Length: 360
Image 1 (cartoon, one colour):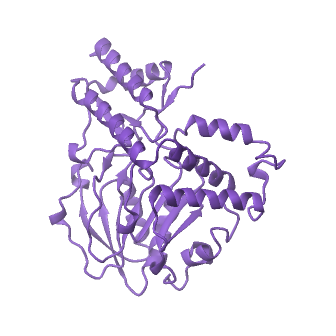
Image 2: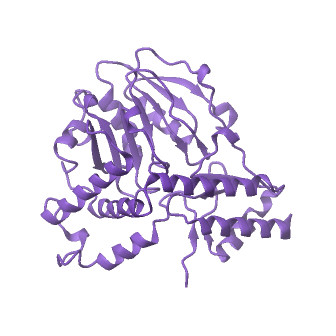
Image 3: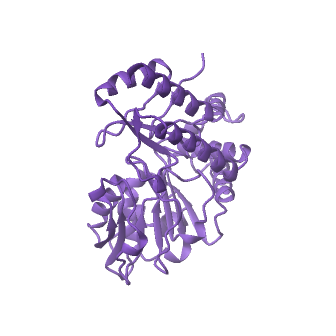
């Protein structure tokens, strides 16, 4: 029996080839007699897994040598606090762009540590667009500028990297990292929870420029200090070893698929096909400004909201899982990350067309 198509926003679908390899190695990793879950994180076997994973991630993203890569715990939510704790330096003000639910959470946490200047917000437009660049009110002495490139709940995405001058640019790439090529050199720091495009929940990747290390707030705990974590090679404490291992398998899968250029072209095709199907139907609607529609998370609303439960039930029967929109916005949401094959998107489009014909 073929697997259903899982459109969950996260934890999300993983490549089937990765799952099969993990299954084959679950009780005995490459003749070691141990599962990766049983290995010492400081043993030679796991150190080789960790080293290869980092090398492949660096290759995929073309990460410059003067950036450190960390594999941590705590999810992106922990980074909401760790970023200001580590990057405030001698300054007191930080710039945040408010474009969705995750931006708001990051802002709320940063306010515990700094004066947060909200440079612009699209909340009054229900986060369906991104404020024009010429409306942004940036603070000239900000310690850093933070934004969320892709808002998973609202389905809103930046299609280019904002220019904020010499202020270090910080971004929460949790739901869009590795979906296409990225110029890491334009950022001071990138962080990403793994459970969307990297691997299973429990792992967080941080990519930080070296000149931003060593300037944390005086009372920053060692476990939250990027410099401490860098010196310990992400092993100041026991890292999430199995999640790190799975991430490494995903990185190898991405390379085998042709790298981020090929993956990006595939993701663009998937998104364009789904948005076209929505736009060409009077039964479905996407509320986001077409200029800023997400490639990864596609929300849509039925013309008859009273049919939402019927839609979800029949979709599940058809092998299309986890299509309910976030509880804060309702409707539907199809998350089509790297591991979602094109045939999964086509299966959803076919179902949507059939459903609209029967209930429209």
